[in-house]
Length: 358
Figure 1 (cartoon, one colour):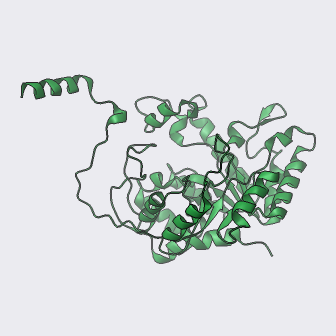
Figure 2: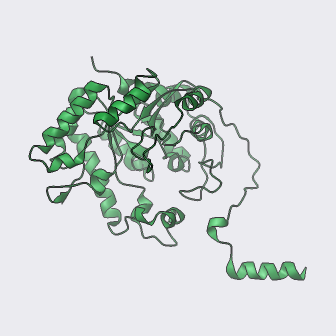
Figure 3: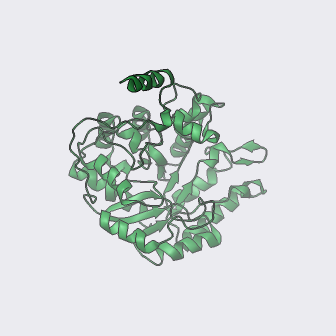
């Protein structure tokens, strides 16, 4: 008893290190996690290529294993966002789209360094045209546009006039644009005890944008909104729920712009902690929300968490299969979408966007 009391006093004085604190809930709750998606699903946000891997290897070293995971979870197809351009695009198309028709749809990128050439905007358009002719099914815009891309002596945001011809070209070609702008709102706040993603920012301090603050965050969001409004023929999918911390704002953008969509890749941790607001958003715009996982390498357990979010009314469950949630210490709740909403989010919306123009 004396030793136990001494340990309690020491614990009270020092406290546990937060990174090692892994409380286990004592709630007794049902787990209705589906093993498979309710309908054959299209995952609109995956990374299967090489450009994000620091070793330069394929994110999915074994395509056979990947297909087995897809089959076991009823994921009919995946959008591979790692096509890049030129030979790298060809290599992705050979490995995925051409080797397994209908199972993979690879999106291309453009090389922003072209903007420093006198005819840079033209070169971007021609690059996109070549990539689509080769088989790219869409254009992926990463967050570097807005955060780090510079050309002709200034920082380039999505609504910069230099990029305007690219958005128009995507609309003319009939290919969707999946755009990732900014980072979570917490990354633009001070890295202090009040930041809900403090642990993540301490692990990855280079991710902090606190110097620019929320004004930078909102300017980045508005830059994409300007693109959407100026290009009504171009179908834009905002990655990661766009602004999952403020679904009222997301709904307002959807209401104003019929060509604006969101994917829920790694936004499930935001949607699931506000289930009534998230369910209402999807109910209002069921034709503009798409399944996305943003998990690499692909894991069945991670996919099933998305199925649990969308299909069940389960309460207070983790948004990740990691021992400690890496992006914030909160639980999520199921949205219990109806059959028609599930059909659209899982399949119909993606099928429509991926259809080749006639």
